[in-house]
Length: 329
Ligand SMILES: [Ca+2]
Ligand SMILES: [Ca+2]
Ligand SMILES: [Ca+2]
Image (cartoon, rainbow, N blue to C red):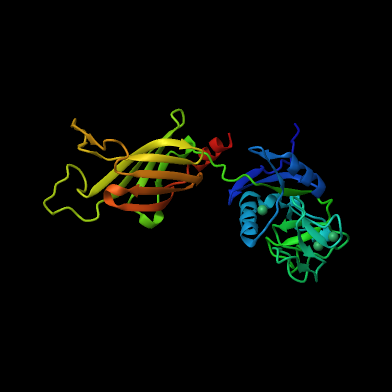
């Protein structure tokens, strides 16, 4: 009987930050092969390129996703040789292939750095070299990786995790592809869940998406501004309970919904129910999602003179994966 040991690459993954979509490809590739592969990829018809990092926020967002999704057991599949200190890196679009010391971004040719270790930023553009150590062009290094481990390995590091090093372009590394997609999130039935704003705990939202109808309904459970009189009675629970529902059609990541106030529905009792007539005459909600666990409820309720915007997240994250799977379809 044979035991087959197979080395499988870690799964590729995708994330969205500030209207840009990123894919991390875990097929270890030279910088040139990675750059060509990036240009061959599209998201919603938008062509990709090796990531162009404009500021520390973008660098941190990418680095955090790399660390969250790449197991340290797989760092050996995306490590440079001794010239790169044996450390783990992921390719980005920065390179000085055309002219030594002229560091440009591959997507638009913008130069952000001139020189080697003692060089300087061009027009104040962002870089994340460890000051005084990189880019050193050691043994001819012409493309940058963002390091996962810090470098070099095994000695007090020159570069901390998340910083950049120029390394040999023939290293086989994972790579980050960026797409200027705009906000591509689309409402899907994986959003169906209980949602709330942690800052206003004790109230919340139930959201249901109806894909065939192209509609969303929402119920907002809340309380009145003051307690009812002591002698006020409720058939069940607190007499101060208030809730409202709204429904509307959605397009892409947003639904505009008419509030429908309902009253007289007594617990498990057939009653004549009153509803807002016409729907929306009390006001509207605009429900917007920017991801599978992040959205806002913007309310405008002229009948009570209130407007505002409530950030919402799920009460529990169990259905995020379902939403992301539907979102990728
Ligand atoms: Ca960018
Ligand atoms: Ca170089
Ligand atoms: Ca270097």
